[in-house]
Figure 1 (cartoon, one colour):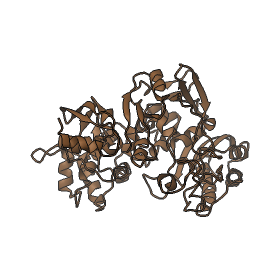
Figure 2 (cartoon, chains in turn cyan, purple):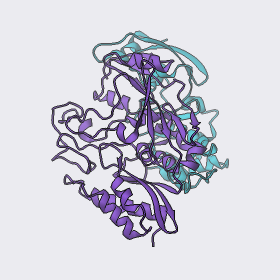
Figure 3 (cartoon, chains in turn purple, green):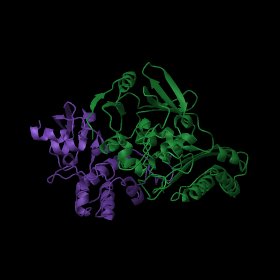
Figure 4 (cartoon, chains in turn red, yellow):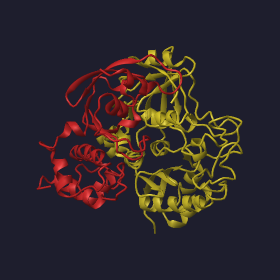
Length: 189
Length: 327
């Protein structure tokens, strides 16, 4: 449950709608909270549930720092409302792994030095995990030579195209691509 | 963001009834609407969440076509094996747009009714007849590199940003609409969108008590389909110009063609002029150039976007050469 001060986060601009009592399933935990309907999923995660691993960059779906997995699919948590995601399975970077038990993609980013400042990294990692599931499912991309052909060869070009929704202003892209490739190949990362 | 109340619709007719109240809007993926609400460009007082309505399926039609539910996500449509094999231009258009994250959220219906990316529409300090009717158009005489070259007016030179809808236009899709009383109608996609005229804030023929429930694709023409997009970045960018083409050839002669442009007008721009210039003609670069000239005969540049006229011609020629060959 949130405190009175947390309630104020969603109410700060003028008139307000009644708070909505919602249940979110985050990282396999059922969490109940009361939110202004305006609350983005991102703000619910960070400000209400104190899961600050998910980052707010542009808050307009342009940078990908807020990427989380909803029912296994990567989405921008800044461009959706918390009230729309009752009973969905939400996974944040905290749910993928922790320092003692890193997810293979987290380990790959560490081993390949796939970041500098690290701000975009949680979004990059959640996006990469979702992206590899899309490749596994055979989804085509803009650089797939023939969209009708089943099966995707995960070239660096495919990785770059599929990760274009995640901006890294430190420009750690070469190592991000290497980390994702390493993780996909199941190698040492 | 302005305050609003929220409800989740469980039934399509109830959803339409709920949105009929003043100030109400549908929300599905939310990727465009919430962006605009954060900027106070959209300010609904009530949101009707239609994302969980049972309208996600992609179904075979008796005539050999396909029906795409309005709530099917862009990524699901792009990845559908029937779409990829029978309507590859649609799959290509979808994967050329937005990012992986956004395609996982964006719905088919929402993609159709997304708003323009004109920077003056987004700038609440600027005049914009689309955002604030009667306030003028800052793009005319302003920085208008991305703006329309066909079908624009003195009120608005904005473009429609969708890639998906351009492919659907070349594929002669129909939009399926449901009213609160349960009645339905179908509108050809070319008739669904309006040109700006002096009411650029009215972008399509959707009535206040109507909801998009699906998109119907007729059986595809035989022949090659292509979607080619030209933009400032290699990925995650709107089109400067795009072309969707369907071309049937028989022994070096074009027997049928469908051509639509994106990034050039207030709506996906079907070019019957180009199609007429192609039909019955040899599949040669000279034919494509004639078709390009016909398509752009009425094009008007506004200064910064003058280059789009030549770019649209060249993009069409290149697309046709790839689709039908060039001798």
